[in-house]
Length: 156
Image (cartoon, rainbow, N blue to C red; front, side):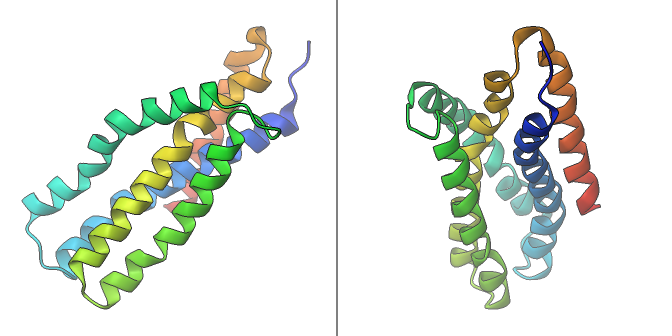
């Protein structure tokens, strides 16, 4: 039994993008809310907590859906591909709305990005156990977490 490092690293790229996104999101969005839309710290905090509220319901939902999905590209990949593409597309609305100082459009773009991220987060994390033999999963998990740390560090 041998660890497939290239495949594990490829799976880790999904976690890298997730970690990079959250690092950037947690830094930039409060600044935009306060400096562009002049919202109070309290309102910014409430808006920033929205991703946690979404996550409570959506992460288990999309994890369970990906468990039951069967396609020719696998159980998880449709969610990873769609969620990633949607997040990238919707993310473009955030600076557009901020530039135009349109808070409702900004909030709509933010909600769409958060939903898109939730679509692929649980399925992306579940890919590692799908491709890694049980005795090697702790090593696979270490690689995935290292990739996540690299994603966060790239944004710093």
